[in-house]
Each structure stands twice: as structure tokens, then as C-alpha cells.
Length: 130
Figure 1: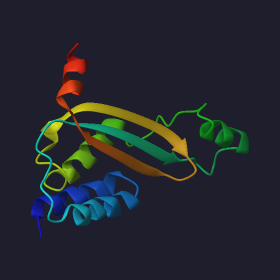
Figure 2: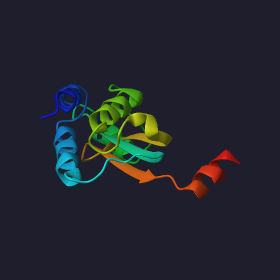
Figure 3: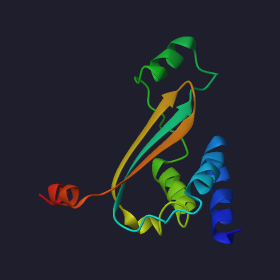
Figure 4: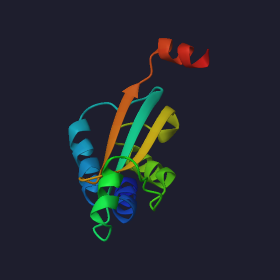
């Protein structure tokens, strides 16, 4: 039991769609026995919001086609912070390791947050510096 992790998961539950906490728990299980990431990492976050049922059929179709954007809470930066805090001590030593970040927020028929993490190679670091 990690009190820091419990607090981060509680924070996630209040900010993100419910399945996200379960995914953090799945990450905890998947990483069991594996060393935490220690070097620079890149992260891609895709935040998919549910389309409001109260909207007209036309506006719902527009949202799913990417013609209407989810300019609603939670803020993308708050989602990032909650996820990153939840992954501290689970996937990586600390979220200070994130040096490359891409975030996308859209409407989707299936609300979710997808997180892709990769280790940065020296060649990638040199390329980004150029």
C-alpha cells in the first residue's frame, strides 16, 4: 500500500472519467516487479469526452466529426497533472522525467483517456534540440 498512490488515485477519480482509475490500477499491476523508468520520457495523451446527449443529432454528428471541440472541463492541463501524479512511483520515478508532451482533447462515442509513454533516445534528444 502506497499512501501517495492512494491520494493520486483519489484525485484522479474526481477529475477524470471513472475507467481511468482502473487503468492506473492496471498499470500498477503490469509494472509489478519491474524497475521504474529513470530517464527522459515522452508522453502522448488523448482525452476523449462523451458527446452531450442533450445536443441535437446534427451537433452530435459534428462533434464526432471533429467540427466541434470540447472546450469544457476538465482542462487538459489538469488531466495531465492528475495522470502524471498517479504514475509517480508506478511507471516512472517522478513526472519531472517528461520532456516531450503532446495532448489532444476531442469528442468521442467512447469517453476515455489514452496515455502512450516512450523512453527518449539520445538521437531523439539531439534531434529535438536542433
